[in-house]
Length: 411
Ligand SMILES: [Zn+2]
Image (cartoon, rainbow, N blue to C red; front, side, top):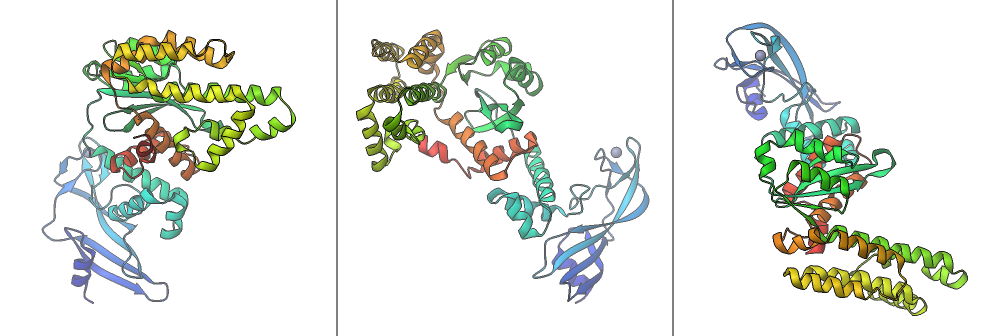
C-alpha cells in the first residue's frame, strides 16, 4: 500500500503519511506523518494565538485507534513556535489534546468506554494501566465540560453525602431543574457552602436563585441567608423522611437492646426492611415484618408513623399540609416514642421551610437521585481520590441520563 492510501485511511485533516511500518509478529502498525503542503497555520498551544514563524521541528509518538488487529501509533512532525507572550512553545494540533502520548480520538474511545464500564475493565480492554485510563477519562470529561453551555441556577439542592472513612462528608450542590450536581466541597460547614457561593457564582447569578432544598442543618441555612437572601429555603421530603427513618432505627435499636432471646433473633437483620417503604417490599418481606409487628407494637407504631409522614407531600395547600402535620403529631401522644417526639420538635422548629414546599413546589426526588448516582459511581470506581473527577463523572451521568435509577423509583 502506498503512503497516500495510508493518509486516506488515517484521516488526519491536513496531514499526510510519508512513511509506514508494519510488524506482522507484533501486530503493530506505525505511521509517520507531517503537514500537507498547504497546511501552514501555526497556533501557539499556550495562548491560542496565530504565529507566523516556526522556531524548530520536533517529533512525537502517540497511540491512535487500532487498525483491524493492528495496534497503531502515529509519529507526528511537530513545530515549535516562538510566541511573543509564551516564549518557545509547541504548536497546537487538534489531534493532540494533551501532552500524553495519545491521539484525541483514542482518548475519546477510552472516555466513551468509561461511561459504561469501570476503569479497571477499560484498562484490560485497551491494555493500559488503570491510572492511565482514569487520567484519559478525566481529560475527556474536562473537554466535554469546557465545551458545553451551563444552564442558569434557579432551583438549587444542597445535601451532604458520606463517602467513607477517608473522604468523610462531602457537600453536594446541585441544579434541581437539570438534575445534575454542580459542585462538591469537602466537609459540611457553613464555610463549605460559602465557598461555593463565592467561587462559583457572580452576584447576579446568586440573585437569580429562587429556592434551595436543604436538610434541616443549620450551617447550610446560615450560608444561604448570607449569600442568597432572596431565596426560599425548603426542607424537602427526602431529607425529612431520612430523619424519620433514623427515628425508626432508633426505636428498633432500643427494642433490640432492651429485650433478649427470641425477639432479639427476630429483629436481627430486619433493619433494611424497616427502612424500606411498604409498597417497595415483596410479599415475603411483608410477612416477616408483620410477624415482627405482632410481637412488638412499638416498632409497628414507629413504622406506621414513618409511612404516614410521607403523605404530607400529597397536600398542595399550605393549610391542608399544616393540618395534616398537626394530626400526625397528635398521634404521638401517649406513645412514648422518644425519637419521634424529638422529630416532631424538629419539624415544628422548621415549619416555615416545610410549608415553603407548597409555596414554591420544587421537584421532588432529584436530590435523592443525584445522591444515588454518586453512590453508584463511588461503589463502582472503588474510591475517587479526586473530587473533581467524581463531579465530572456524575455530571456526565446526569447529562446523558445513563443512570437515573433512583429518580425512576421515586417518580
Ligand atoms: Zn502563546
